Image (cartoon, rainbow, N blue to C red; front, side):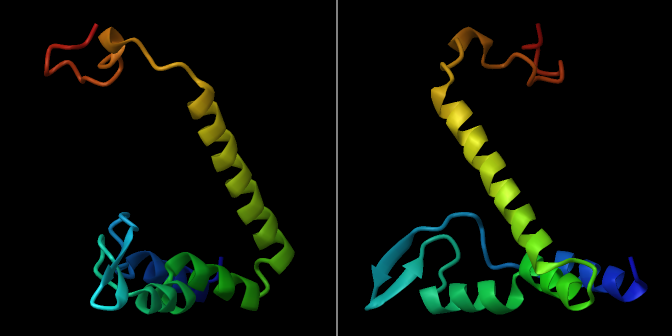
Length: 114
């Protein structure tokens, strides 16, 4: 990885996203506003199209020839498929017995470790 690319990656990682991972739009005063970040649809679209660190970094890699568009799309499709399979597995799995809810979670400090 070139030093310029390393610097771009560091800048992308450090960019401050307005997202708080609650994306629900409500109609407020004739605008659709996200109740998580309190931004309009236009502001969210602007962020995603111009400031999203993943999009910016992948575009930089493609422009420098370190990544092809085809490889990028294959990677995105692979991740989307993996997520879809994980969600499908979770939805088809039985719920765990309530008595096992803390198994493997507690460090031992809370006394729930078995």
